[in-house]
Length: 159
View 1 (cartoon, rainbow, N blue to C red):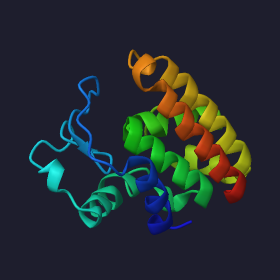
View 2 (cartoon, one colour; view 1 turned 45 degrees about the horizontal axis):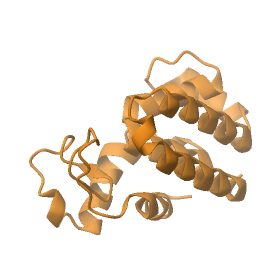
View 3 (spheres, rainbow, N blue to C red; view 1 turned 180 degrees about the horizontal axis):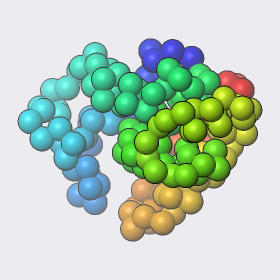
């Protein structure tokens, strides 16, 4: 899986403009939030602009090109939804290595030795545990659970 394929999937989760009062990200479009990008005109954000942000600020920063394609998508999606360091930490937990939030040789080597399917399943379990610990779970949990279900379907195809 390459960035364009992963981003198309991601934008399927994140496509519309919203400004939900309980969303800590506040105004959001294509999954890009005003909280993270305060100087950006969120309402006017185009799909191509969102893709450029995702490549530079998420895909590259989670080292997605160093991961099996299906895992790359899952970590990328997690990073967009919950933050880069959180996604990397929970991937490291799924791998059974120290969860320091920094992708290095130990994490990379362990990922290379594990099956793609095992990483995807373990990461999705970690992600669900993370989401249910959040105070916003009662408001957004149903949507997040649906996202996890769709990502498991993607994982079955990818691995």
